[in-house]
Image (tube, rainbow, N blue to C red; front, side):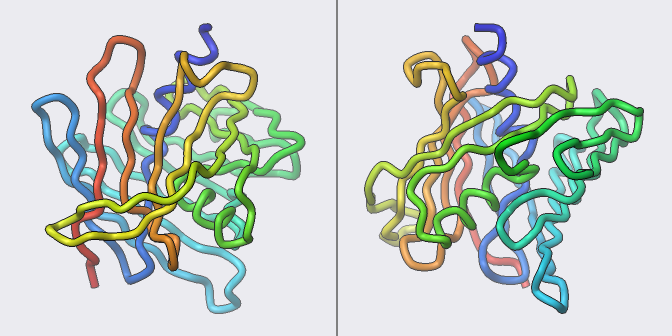
Length: 214
């Protein structure tokens, strides 16, 4: 189960999310701790790539991701208090780190932003898909699978919002041992909510869309 434990941290370290505006503000609650994250994104003029930038000033975590229109990553720059600045760049079926580490990602796309990747998966009409994520701390790749689980009505900011529920698990590991839940706008696939944990025995983390930032 070691692989599953490592994977739990991945979806939360790769916290680049977006709403379909110039940016969005999200609240992040873990136990009694609450922080906020601002995310901005820029579509390339040719429409082929999306640049996603996120900043959590309280946690001192910063990410900059460039992904293809389908969510497959081209590069990820991040700076974490426990890691320092690192750049990951995709070269075919390999992702190379600025420290020289080569990471294989064959047979499925690499989602440096799980939130954006799943949004593009839903927009394509798919209800299930496999993808790779890379843990920024250990620079290890883990294969995940996302699958829709119907629709739900969320209460966000005092408003009722229809959403698509998506569960993410580690390929080959039963969901009873590890899973993460995401919710997206039913019509525009805006990332709305996340619920999961950083590791076994840790408090549940909830992330919710607060407002667009223009």
